Length: 174
Image (tube, rainbow, N blue to C red; front, top):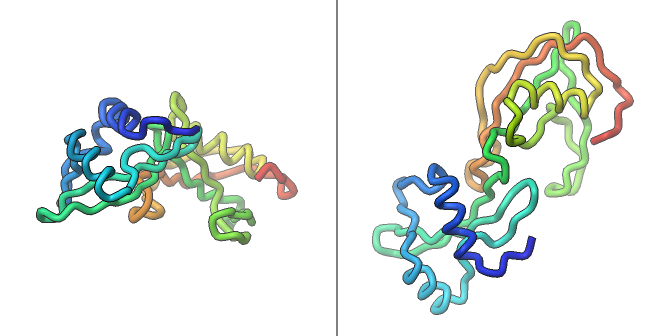
């Protein structure tokens, strides 16, 4: 989605999801006049730069002890967490070989997926396993959470140990 007014979208995001803007060791500047002045003087764009159905790219202005610095981050579009599934079949785990655009190569990975609003994480895990490997899930147990790249993304994922009764090894949806 093309963002015409990045700051309007940024302040809307602040209102809708305030937990994404809590004060940390480097406070996020939320004074609109200061943000506009910084953009004009630096030529740098701030706010919500890009949005898709999966993520949005945000550039924040931070106060680093009186020095203003920008920081980019990716925020998942859904408010629910993503999932990572560790499918256990018989005496082993199943990995999938998946092409990842960002690294321009295939990798072995656990099935995973973005969060979906209105879908609890455990049900999302079952859905992802069915979509990615055609799995029949017999039990789902949450074993923790991860942030895959906390330097770039605020996306937290719930991690599930999923016992499965069967799967389709030739499934190619992913």
